[in-house]
Amino acid sequence: MSSTNTPPYETLDPENWDEMRALAHRMIDDAVDYIQNVAERPVWQPVPAEVRQRLQTPAPQLPEGAGHAYAEFKRDILPYPTGNIHPRFWGWYMGNGTFMGAMGDFMAAIMNPNVGGGNHVAPLVEQQVIAWMRDMLGMPAGSSGLLTSGGSMANFIGITVARNTNCGYDVRHLGVRAAPGPLTVYASSQVHSCNKKAVETLGLGSEGLRSIAVTADYTIDIDALQRQITADRAAGMVPFCVIGTAGTINTGAIDDLNALADLCAREKLWFHVDGAIGAVAILANNVKSQLAGLERADSVALDLHKWMHIPFEAGCVLVRSESAHREAFSLTPEYLAREVEAKGLASGAFWFSDYGLQLTRQFRALKVWLSIKEHGLERFGRMIARNVEQAHYLGRLIEQHAQLELTAPIGLDIVCYRFNPGGLSAEKLERLNRDLLAELQEQGIAAPSHTTLNGVYCMRVAIANHRSRNEDFELLVEETVRIGRGLLN
Ligand SMILES: *Cc1c(COP(=O)(O)O)cnc(C)c1O
Image 1 (cartoon, rainbow, N blue to C red):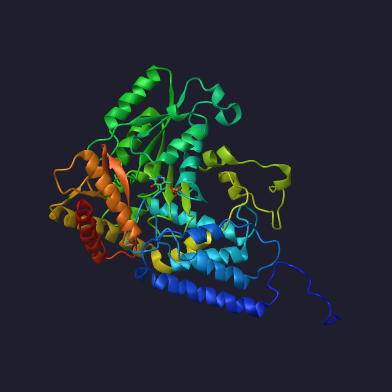
Image 2 (image 1 turned 135 degrees about the vertical axis):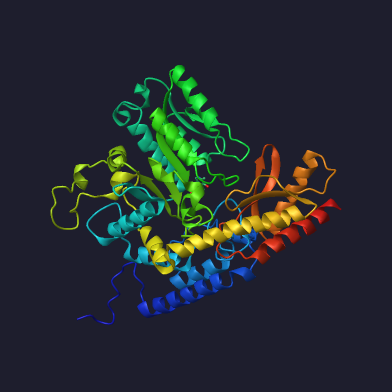
């Protein structure tokens, strides 16, 4: 019998479940309001100095309580996001998120399974999501895959499998020091920097990634690639992989994937595709044909937290050869031994930890699974197709305006432009556009980012946004010109 004097048994559970339930309901209400009213808030606002200060205080030693912690969250954290959930956020390349995706992350944390492996339902959900992605891209049944933190890790895994599989010796065992010559990867000058990081981390050095010129449309120059490979072989290098890009980060260009697949077949090179931006656009009628050849890749990296709008983080790697994928990463120490177990939680030979770097893995498949079930793939395709149309709509608005100019061909949903009133030096023009971009952001109007193309600084509008409307682009053009003219005075 418990007496009223007995203190409750201490755990990390709520002391009062009814109070926690009420708080959790308030949190859901706040979350719905936050998303529903996002367009009424500025795209972005800086974190005030007093908030920054409060975020540098030491950890409390004693309980402050869930309600107190949440109140501080609402005051100091919730108002200052990146802005990528807003309809006029077009910076770098991000997605908006989906509400059901967020609920998926919540329920995943509530279940809190470890998807490194084991006999439970979460790995089955991840396998299903991977099969959906495989079928979507037209890769063969039996291809393998893994959900990752994002495109960077997906590319890293693809290039690692390529290195371990296609260098002509047991790289995993002997390392790069046993290579008969410098191991070499090829990609266009527009390849995303995470691939460079991957090649460096894999021990090949930045010299291990050959940067190949692009043509006027920013796709890889296939002839230049062929010449470089031939010259490198003659010089004793060991080419093993070509990275094609399906949607470059600068301009959305898609390399000729069939031509790359042909070249790789001819040269016996691993064909990896960085499709972080563009692979999921296979769902869009106005993009699909440009991705022909993607299904021939040996490995593909795609991002679901970009143009599929799954809440961060959600990427995916697909590898045509399941055995090559597993052999690059599987490690089965005794304390994780499971093949012998026929029954129980540790049974089953399939463990996701054999396909990547992580042992403990979150249940990131759930938010993807819920979002895709909620909307169906066709709707995602329509959202992507609409962004491509919006890019061209914005392009027309820019071309119609005497003081604005496009600085690159529009690829997919990426528009690069600048304010150019004429008569300014290159230096002044760059300063002007830098200030203009900062003002667009600081005034909370819109959030493009910037890039430099052939030495020309420009603003870059990447429209991976299911909330943007045509009016948002009209406003961008009006405000660009208003601010630009103001800066001239
Ligand atoms: C964003 C991006 C990456 C990196 O993906 P993360 O999800 O940010 O890790 C790789 N390649 C391209 C083309 C990208 O746009």
